[in-house]
Length: 463
Image (tube, rainbow, N blue to C red; front, side):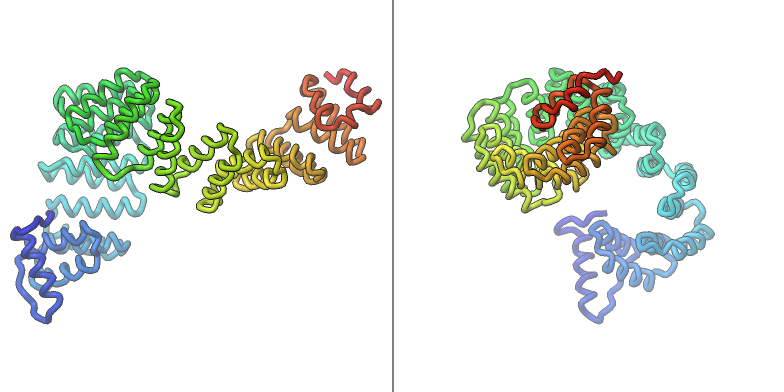
């Protein structure tokens, strides 16, 4: 249980911690020790929890509940054999104690033996009237097994026994979403809301399902009801803002996002979307102000840096765009989108070496889009790095075999490098794939295009 302020349990905790600072051992009854241990475990204070368990068992050596806490700590520390021995001893004393089964199931789960964990938890169900936690644990084990239908059924049972178990409600909806059962989720939520019409969480989740199905007016109505149920529900204002933004009602969207800034600390998500809305409204100064606030609020949010960079890119202010994308790269040099923007901006500025470096970096980071290979190779041609361009396009062929755009480029390069047999091979391949792309030779390799031998090849039919 949780310790409140100025109550008996809080005094017990204070008394216990005072005792630890002295050599005087004070007496606590077993229930007081249980509350102390539970408090420390909840707050992750494992060392203090272990001290409380030891002192508790020194004073109450036969307490099953204190021994169960000891077993729980063993499991947490991965001392599974010690936990099994202790639980077997406790089972011999009290075979009807459901907590013993829960801890045994925990061991099976730690060993990835989830089916066995479920069997043990189902046995525990027969021993208690307090079934909500057990159904939740069974649901989680089914999630580990990717058995979402079974998981969903058990989380639903949690709600049948406790309609305010919102963690179970979230898990039910998670299962529906994983199974792409958005319509079924809507039916379930509407039934749930018939029983609990002022549940802001259910209205919020219903709105998300409608939004996923692009039923924006119904989504908006659901978020309205979520806000009526709880006018401080930040998530509902955020989602309502997203719907209004989608509907092109940018001023209303700004109003909703702005409410979240007043209810709690500003979130980078809200700031970014306010900036997006102001940009749509062509209020550039305000858009920039919120983009700037976004990157200051969360420098690690790539969407903020991307938004402000693209803003300047759209305005053709490439120097300013380059300034911001450089700042972004200094924070996260492994972000593919940053490097792609870096390359595009440098290309616009005719900084071809830097542009090529940017595209090379995106490839190094695993971005193998055809356009990246093509643009980088064309830049290498401009820079006179013909052999590097050949290597680039040959690598690209591994990912995009029988691609005419690559074959024409390789043909032009090999003819330029005075390797006519390879040039002929690739040109014939290219013409077989798509004759209409032959303009690539003319645009990138005009001198090669004008050669009689190449013109002769271009006029032949290789189908």
